[in-house]
Length: 344
Ligand code: ADE
Ligand code: ZN
Image 1 (spheres, rainbow, N blue to C red):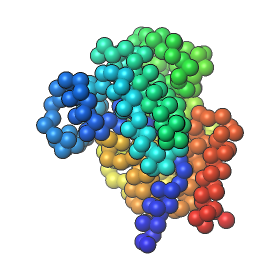
Image 2 (image 1 turned 90 degrees about the vertical axis):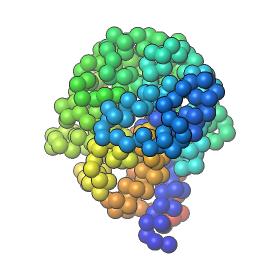
Image 3 (image 1 turned 180 degrees about the horizontal axis):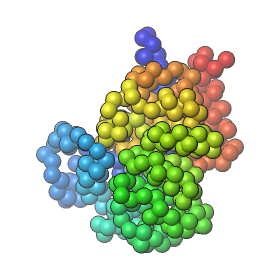
Image 4 (image 1 turned 30 degrees about the vertical axis):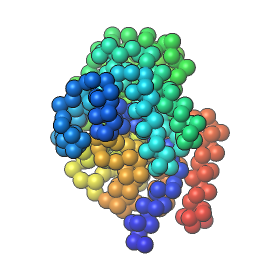
């Protein structure tokens, strides 16, 4: 076996958690066509190949325009269940044992799809994943930051009857021009409801947005965080506070956050003691699920078996799970590493 084939096989068998996954971003073109047909919705593509060919992005906004348009085929409770279960089948095949998934309620409620229908469909898919695939999961309600604070508050209100279904809230969509400060009061209200807090920060936005996410939103976990590496004081703080970063290498490549995977900041993040995890973000649009993110990054920057083991450990450590569950799952990672001769 070549060294990279050996590492790929090791990655494939490694138990992991996925902490940064937009369920709408897991809509594969095949399912998009099936749902379009089922629901009588017109889509501006002739074939699955034409959809894939359209996935060529220069920046985040290019992607978001296509991603929001794609979500138009999702209408019924069954659609959301099918979407979620299809993701979990892919995740299970990658040995993902636990996933904390984002959904964007405003993308659906703004089209007249009821909030409760979306949640009930996704929860049905998550319950099936637990029962049939053994994959546990949690649901994170993500606010669209290009919309107003008032609309975010209305979304939080709509969520109240379903609160027991959520582990946390997030903040996504167009970053530049929509700083975390815009959502300071919404995040405080979400925390008062007992929810965990995450926010996309430093994907395209400057280090100042990462500072705001920490100081004003008081996040428990940071999504992306790449541009933190431009700010020495921030790097030291993130290391000191052991803030989990949910980094998404193939997303960064497709959205031109990095020009080449060889220049991805993960090795530097690890060297500086940051609590990095690897995730797929919107795998249908970015060309790979979790194992592809591990393998392609490992190949490009030369990660070792020990480093990928650490990344998998971090994924459980950074999950919104009880401490005892985290310890049990990290023990499974370590047992796997020992059986492969990676840990002594
Ligand atoms: N929504 C889905 N994927 C996203 C990303 N990578 N950044 C911001 N918003 C998103
Ligand atoms: Zn994301």
